[in-house]
Image 1 (tube, one colour):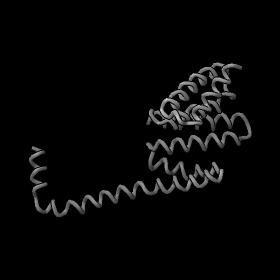
Image 2 (cartoon, helix red, strand yellow):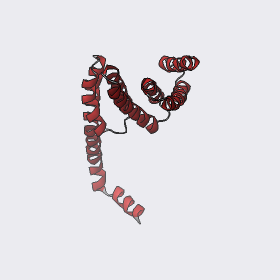
Image 3 (cartoon, helix red, strand yellow):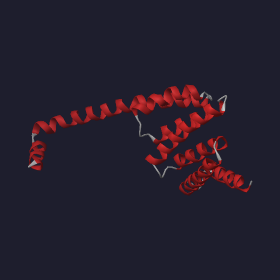
Length: 175
């Protein structure tokens, strides 16, 4: 029944005349919705290049509300929280910021398990948190670092950072 109605609509001369205009409006609407997020990300990238993590987050976090499934954006947000973690004054702040970074990295890795940068973000975030954790948490984090770094290197064998993280994991294991 529905397919007959669709065929009638497509064969209707008015539909054929109106379709290009309707399609153009739909495409423009989609572009307008995507443009603000892309603009915010670009502005955040400028702040990142100037080493201003807090300012970058001022752009990345609103962009996340517009595009919450953007893996690249989630990886960027995770990175900025790790940078803030390094600048934090006390262990409690570092732990809080590191946990936020790890959550964003895990979200990115869950959305796209085949993204090497997302996997690497998980490994790096865990590595940053590890000195602040208990022995039991360190052991669990060590496993996650190894799994994530292995997967990142498997997905992108040319990733120098992936190999570096994996090497640091092996070095820490020997101590």
